[in-house]
Image 1 (cartoon, helix red, strand yellow):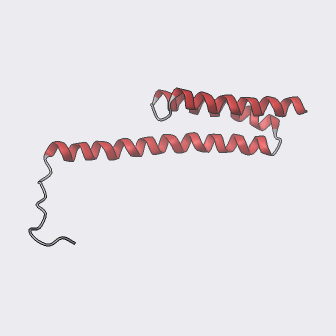
Image 2 (cartoon, helix red, strand yellow):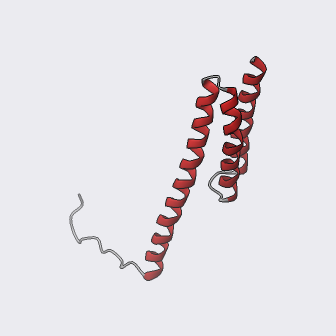
Image 3 (tube, helix red, strand yellow):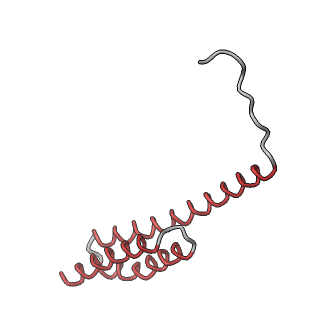
Length: 99
């Protein structure tokens, strides 16, 4: 460590403290939304991997709805959500074609 004068810290102003509070709140909301989307995708993938076509088809609309909500809330970008929807739809169609 360097020796000499100690580092002087600036006092945090009210605007900085407010910005910190806003960032923490937004991060919590984004984390909640992202978790909800990931859980929905995980459930649908589990249904697809267990070859449960009927269950996966029921979960599809709920999963796509969660992805659309994430787009509206700006948690996911539109391209990312559409990529997820496309891949899940392809897997669902492949499962239905197999049967």
